[in-house]
Image 1: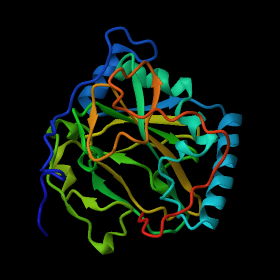
Image 2 (image 1 turned 180 degrees about the vertical axis):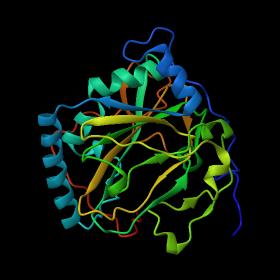
Image 3 (image 1 turned 90 degrees about the horizontal axis):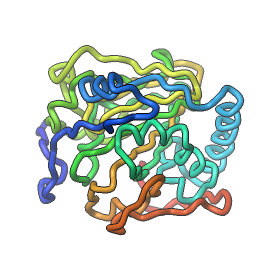
Image 4 (image 1 turned 90 degrees about the vertical axis):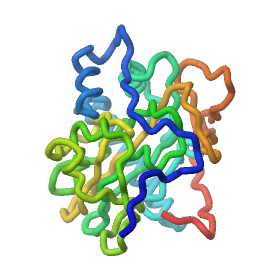
Amino acid sequence: MPQVTDAYPELDRDLRFVPLGVNQPRRLTPAQISQYNDQGYLFPFDIFSTDEISAIRGYFDDLLAQATDAGWNSYELTNWHKHCRGVWDIVTDSRILDYVQDMLGETVILRHSHFFAKLPGDGKRVSWHQDASYWPLSPSKVISAWLAIDDVDADNGVLQVIPRSHHNAQVAFQPSAAQENNVLNQTVPNPQDYGDAPVGLELRAGQISLHSDWILHGSEPNDSPRRRCGLAMRFLSSDVRAFQGWNQHSIICRGTDPSGHWANHPRPLGERIPAKPADATP
């Protein structure tokens, strides 16, 4: 199968990992920031209490039921912070932003949110990939916060990372084969060639992990009787630029964007389930 080394060869992107972190962090320690830059990830961090995440889980249960009725599947709830007040409130929660701000600096912009809900026995995997490979952004100053809405462990398809693989920046990938049953559409073969042994980011509901946009990661199918749901939130600094309209779904969570490059979606008035376009794909 042909290998691809740049998903956007027509764009002038800087395909390098950029170390993150501020000089005087408030929530993270300098050692944690150094570990992130060296290993490409950090976890776990307690964000929501048991009662809070229980309420969030109930909210998502209802949201998914309504989304399914409207024709969406459990992997298609993307950027619904623009439509649903409850999602907007999660992605702008100050406790999450405090950690992210220690990595990105004064201005924190949410570019993208995506629920990954692996239903019991649905057979879907997320093949090994790099987030930044999918995104027409430059420079690469993006950090993902992954919130566990359900408990996440090896039995129900935990997110795995290849430590230190982010130092390679872009690695070759190939289009995913149908038999992979991949939620996405890129696959990096032989991920073990690019870093250390895989690490599973097991989380209790209410905790988050942080990972680089260049670290190789993926997850196996959920073969357990339990759901595995997480909310991936992609944050970046104001000097990042987006191509092809990828700046239209954002929220300026902290700080300012004098350039006006990034959209700033206000808190929705309520809960609106968007209509699914006829040509929508997962």
